[in-house]
Image (cartoon, rainbow, N blue to C red; front, top):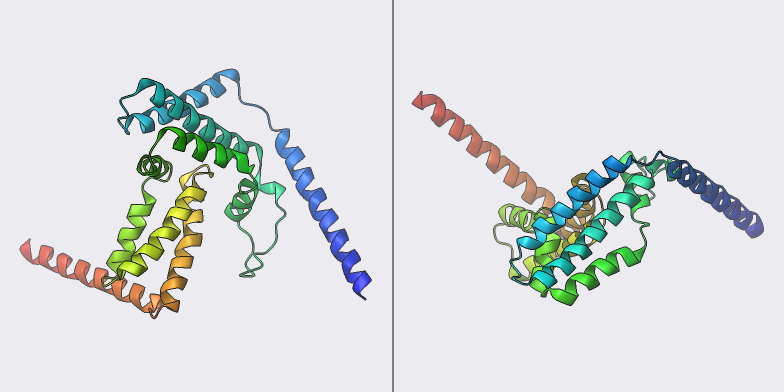
Length: 238
């Protein structure tokens, strides 16, 4: 009986690898962008990298050039990997944790997460050669449009009496989300990565004496009540 199970698993694995390989082959046959389109795309990335690095005010042309190249190379690698690896290379199926059918976004996240680790390592190593940790974080914030600070502010609004220990744990998770998210192409994918860590934060609060569901409901109810009061006041003033 064990032999049958092992054989079945092996066969399923071979079929899965075949499907993924076929999907990647199909993705690889997509027409390449025209030279003009590629040049424009590269110019857009170079401008973004230049703007991000300029915001650091390094006052060192050589250092700025090195950091700009590190960021631009990484952005182009992420873009090219995303564009050349279709979600279709991941077979449709279910999330084994939730049992829900994998969405197109789920499948694209899966294939993008197979990006070679060296791409991320080269970014972080390159940044840290010329920047302080605080400056590195500022660059990562540019990639993720400031989602760490924005999300932390949301937790503080929902949990007004958040303790220093709780805030530190939440911030650690959000920073991990940020560093992982820089390897994904657009804000939808970045937000999906942050959702993973937001779930971890909610679980952390629940296991440390909080009730996230109640806290969130109370916050939403308070926001709705304030909107109702503001609307009534505006109406009476007319």
